Amino acid sequence: MHFLIAAGLAMLLATSQSASACQQFPTIFFGLDPVMHRPEAVIQLQNFAGQALSRIDDIEAIGVVGHSDRTGPRRGRQEIADRRAQAIADLLMAYSIPGHLIKLSGASDASPFVETPDQVREPLNRRVELTVRLLDEVRAAPPATPAGLSPLC
Image (tube, rainbow, N blue to C red; front, side):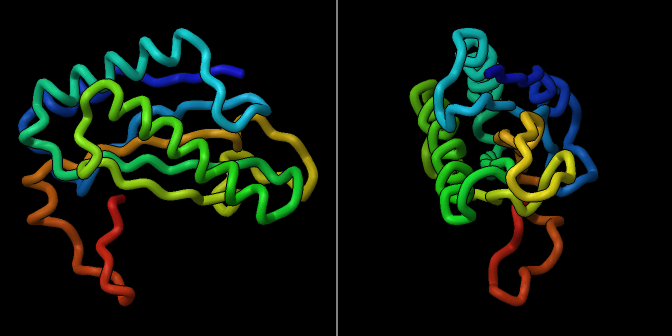
């Protein structure tokens, strides 16, 4: 299992406000275990959190979306996606990111990185995606969805 995350947050926060509604960051990939992480993931998330904290007053939300591959029962896939998102959110909060800024969701296998049939293991589909939305971008965000919720990205 492995995790990846880049320092794109520094670039986003170093520039004047971006024209896009939010910025998506590199994905954190998982092995078969839904929540175990390697030491290098901790360091990468610490760096991400440190950069975010340096400009925390500019951040409206940090989206944390868990995904699963298409193995196992469908209900289990959603639970794994939710657990992955929560595991990363817990780490971010452990690094002092305020919990009210973290917006969790689990996409199960609905948005695969690589299309596969059911019961095919695909490591690239076992992931958590991070997004950052800045305050100035919220004011320019598109109108709310019919459900009354404005999507993070």
